[in-house]
Length: 416
Image (cartoon, rainbow, N blue to C red; front, side):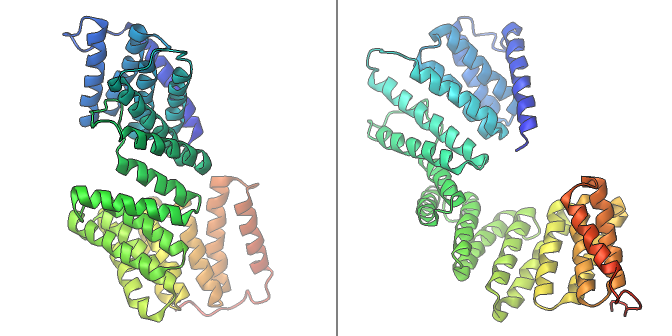
């Protein structure tokens, strides 16, 4: 996440809040502050359903302002309003820094409530629901920022409060924006990030059970869950189990999106890498089939210079080199290079790895002159992108100097 973008967005939000103080609400029927408060939340929910993200956030900001007018800073409703805004920034816009900022405002609002009368049962449910959403938002926002420890602490709090909430008499909880399934998935992901594979597996298995019970065994959400479980199995070097989960994910992708789709290309590439990771000869055919299928889908759905297409090319090529198919790998890379030259002249940061792999293949084949030319192309791009003082062009220059001074840099067989 680009922190400079986050800071810019925070500034924009502050300006937006000032503007909203002078703008009339778009709810003509709302006259009293309480009616306007209800209208702001209804409009926010409407815009969320319609994927009008910016408008939804504007209404959530209005909701905070109106809550402050009606209830004051010391009321738990203020925490509920800030929590809704924090959750909106995270879920709608994917902005963890803003989500944390507003979630901390919600937490401060709860801490400064002082000694108030015990809430009614209905209010207790709303407060607990707000707390679950608050700690879930903090946990997932810290997860997005790769702060696993802070993420896990907050998600555990959300889990404990959810258990307390479930003991209430089945009331509709208006402050709760998080399901049990959302919570266990987030806990699984934060455990995976911290390499707590046993805990992560337990949470993901609960999530799979919840999704299949509610939506069946072809639910779209199962795709990412199976991929994450496969990632854990791969970390434990249980390659066959990883392949099994990825096959499930791929079959759902093909059924829901068809074979020539970006979704199927993504799972196909993961399958190719999983078969390749076994290092077993019996899986060579399957690995090549999935690498080829994935690349074909990417080329059909995306351009030759798209980052995902190029990643598929490089992953496939690296594997071909490992299994001794250097000529096939070189041709694949060369075809990709020619296609990119037609699009952007072949001079882009994304092409550095292509040139480098081609140079490495030439070097392995003893084609020093060709390797030098390809590595030199890498250097020119790196100098343009990073500047001469960066470590990458310095390392490439050292390699080129070594090749240049090599006694072998004379006549070489052309790469056949």
